[in-house]
Amino acid sequence: MEKAVSVVFMGNFTYPRGMADAKRIQHFLDYLIERSICARVLLLRQGEGDVSKDSSDGKHKGVYYKTIGYDIKLDFYLLFALMKYVVNGIVALRSWRSEQNKNILYCYGGLSLENVLFVIFAKMTGYLVVLDIVEDNTFIKEKMHLLGKFKWLSGEFLEKYISKLANGMVVISSYLQHLYQKQLGASLPICLIPISARCHSVQRRINQQDSIKFVYSGSFAKKDGLELLIEAFEQVHKEFNHCVLLLTGGGANLPEYQERIAGNPAIRYMGYLEDAGFEEFLEQADVLCITRTGSTYANAGFPFKLGEYLATGNPVVVSDVGDVSVYLENMEDAIIVKADDLSEIKKAMLFCIQNPEQAARIGLNGQRKCKQFFDPVENGRKLLELLQQL
Image (cartoon, rainbow, N blue to C red; front, side, top):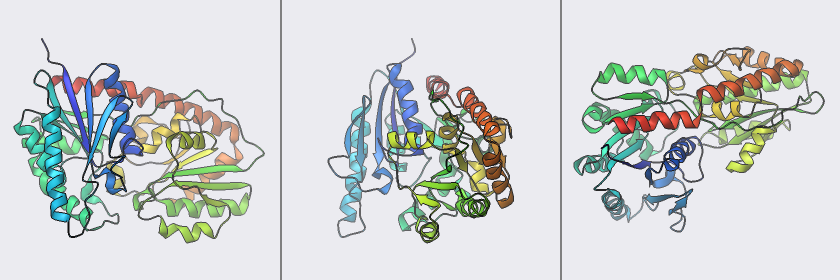
């Protein structure tokens, strides 16, 4: 008789409130919990955010989560905080291990300095380890603090030990699938699980009179190509002054754009929105924009926001990076533009303003493709199938 599965999801991301990474894990959790799989979440510093002791542990949607390392700071107590971090992680993994079940440690983001000791301990105590790789950090060019650089360098070094420390791998794009198949051969199973999003039945409207709302949401990172989007919008706004560009999200690079945003009343920064407000915000948009650079880093992953955008049924302008064209057809399911191409972004925005009926049809087609390819239930099924075959 096949053993039942117990899963510990581990990673450095904000939970239960959080952005793309938290939602990817939550969709997996929802599927597993509905099938009576025992699951817990071990959070490593919660994305280096400000986490209080009161909010570090708790239950969300029936799943217990625990944060370790939220008190790590570059001060006199650093060594003590690091020792406490390691001990708390080991204690959690040991206490959550089930003698009757197949124990799996699901490591979001791959191997790094902050998690490798827990991965080694888990392997030594009978856990099977699955790595979820969503980026190729070899090509990252984002701003990083000292600890982030150590984490990045350690990840590069630890790549060579994947076949020894992991029992299976999940990747988000075909680029990553081919990369690790080439590196690892048949030494461990590699499962491609793309982004996921739940579609909502919302009555779409065609906006022909009010201000046309273009919306961007994301991390404001270099790979997101926000500078081109703003430039394209500024040119479009000179011809059609009844449009606005609304921005939400955050990140280390946000201050670089704030002066430019403040200087144009047609561009508004809405801050960081919680889940309920964020979904309503997307649904009330007219056009949703994902402009990525053509960098290898951008092409290696997959835009998380694409699923959430398509799920609204609104038209989406998206750069042709990664697997976008694998799932979507230009001018049928989305308005796909060349990466780093200012004129194409501008042309796409003008099309949406001048052809609202056609844009609305494209949005609804995109929502159908979202249901077809990015269904959380189907992605959860793929994950459980991988876990059961280990």
